[in-house]
Length: 106
Length: 122
View 1 (cartoon, rainbow over the protein chains, first blue to last red):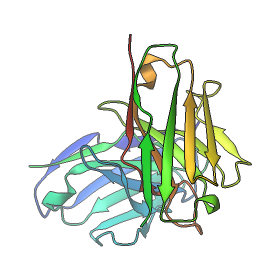
View 2: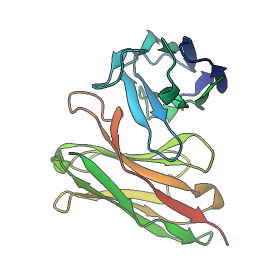
View 3: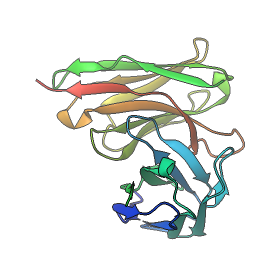
């Protein structure tokens, strides 16, 4: 199985801050990586597919980059509605998710 | 509008069985692969199983292989997960999910149901 190591596991930032989350794969997964947002009690929502493509309807303050084993997810200006847990997911092989990053407002 | 509605969750004893269903609407169900993803209370997401549009290809996570069986009925627009030999660690919310775009990987999960809770406890 491909392991996905996501960091940090939690972070606290102020409204307007730039927030960065990283995800490292245990082997080369090319760009077969997605990012999801999950709010409490809700199903996950796909934000970024194929490492860097913004899903339709997702605000442009969200972005993703990387390829191979190292990936980054960025919120350019944190908004109150972005409070959630974010997950990376690889699909080069059968899907596996990172452990999640809980984003809170400072 | 794409809708996925899970049902069949509940409380079951260790070693017991349960069958989950997912009713799909708003799209041509027979054209899409489908997935089950679960989330234990307070934990992260775990992909469980996938089935191709015609049921030709089926995949399972190692944690459920040999105990769970995924299936679908395209005539009824329904996805199923038969869960046998249930363990406490299978306790989770189970989501059915579909790829967001037929031109992309079926594992880029753009549509999710609301989930159904399975609790395995004596």
